[in-house]
Image 1 (spheres, one colour):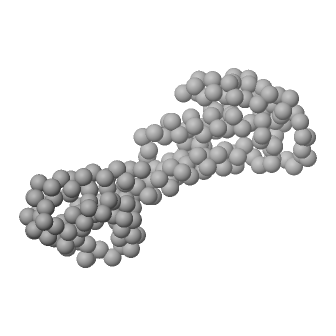
Image 2: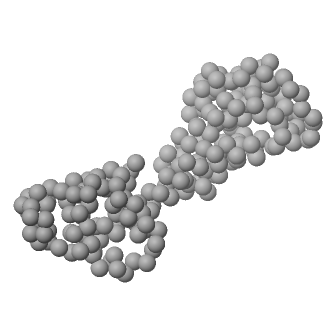
Image 3: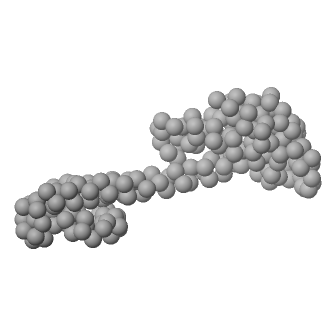
Length: 205
């Protein structure tokens, strides 16, 4: 994996002259060894990039685990963090420790993922709301689940929403819905199927 990260870094690393520009006031965040390592890494030195990776990949991996749990894609996330870090080496001004800087990149990398997961959990609750026992709608008091269910319903076409609500909320059979809407049972069944399919599509967007 580090070879892939190094390849990305070598292709995107900022030129060494950029790193030398804009001298900063020394405030003691980095040791002399770290300064030298960064200088070499900014120039695209593969050994320096590997040393950075080997030194901090445990920290990054542990932080990712605490943020996202036992994710099957954690290796890809580690690679993404280091690719972004290596690409940003020329902009790192040394105004924090390397560990703190990598924490910040890790947090930014996982921000959207965590938001997507949070929404996905709400959507799962909404789908359970739809597909579970009908009396569960009355028993549930989780406002966020109800709100998510309503939000998804509002995106359905009116004819699909109508059948879905009559079946899942009002408890009518397909035959009864057909009588209410003056539609054949086959049409009602087709609309219910399309409504469910559309809800699943909306839930994954």
